[in-house]
Image (cartoon, rainbow, N blue to C red; front, top):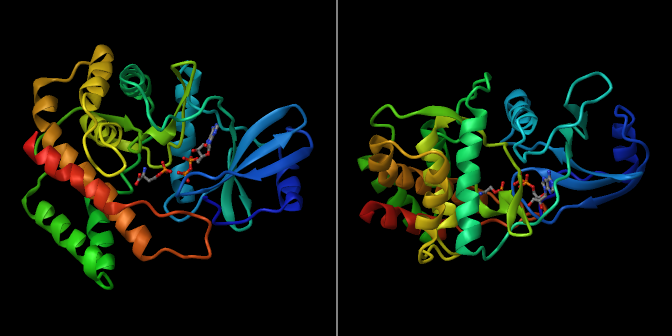
Length: 310
Ligand SMILES: Nc1ncnc2c1ncn2[C@@H]1O[C@H](COP(=O)(O)OP(=O)(O)O)[C@@H](O)[C@H]1O
Ligand SMILES: N[C@@H](CCOP(=O)(O)O)C(=O)O
């Protein structure tokens, strides 16, 4: 469960006084996610998400993250619109954290999507890249190579046993990998397009959420992240046909250039390093008083070996 910063009904009511959303009916902690605090916010006749932004989502990134979802939604893409406060802004402060109210999107994420659902998710990522292309705000990747170095160094100060072995493997990959070796098409990317961020209803994508790692980046890297997320099971084993199905869906909307295709194996290894390091860091420095379940870094690192052979 991801609640890092608890919110009482009274605190939510006071926060809501800056919106035209009516009175609070109920506030429920949301039992998913690992980055930010999320509550389901019920007001009279409406449902929204109340998000308090935690350490990896600094306030300076919100004009990009919320602006991008607003931009996409305005183009008919199923991203959640942030709700404007009476002062015209999107972001207030709640219990010391930047906080926003976001449109609630129906549907649910799929733990075991079919090949056609994986293909639909791939097509929706390509649609995101096309619809976001003219979004003018830039944001550097908050979990790019500089952050990998910081995360690895911080973990190395205390890692033992399995954690240390994971770090050694990551360092070996970093020593031989130059993921951004050539110029590839860039633009706004989601950068965390995992199954738990894609909602489905009746076999079709009904929502794409959680743009808080969104940034300006290489489009094929975003695809490599998504293939690494959708193409493997919880233990890091490839799911037969899933990488192909996702890529087929993506390329049905935006065919890759030959250079992008050729770059995928090294971008996939970069994706494996990125998520292994954040998972390892969050497991090592996990605060047991916070309601969040750390994810398994080793399962993500297994993707690197697959990509190296691809
Ligand atoms: N706009 C939304 N509509 C419906 N459910 C949402 C929405 N945003 C978040 N959620 C729910 O909250 C959970 C956690 O949200 P997410 O943004 O992924 O959190 P985190 O940033 O901590 O990873 C999601 O898995 C989903 O169940
Ligand atoms: N997708 C990342 C962690 C971030 O999770 P989310 O709940 O914000 O989607 C991972 O799997 O390591």
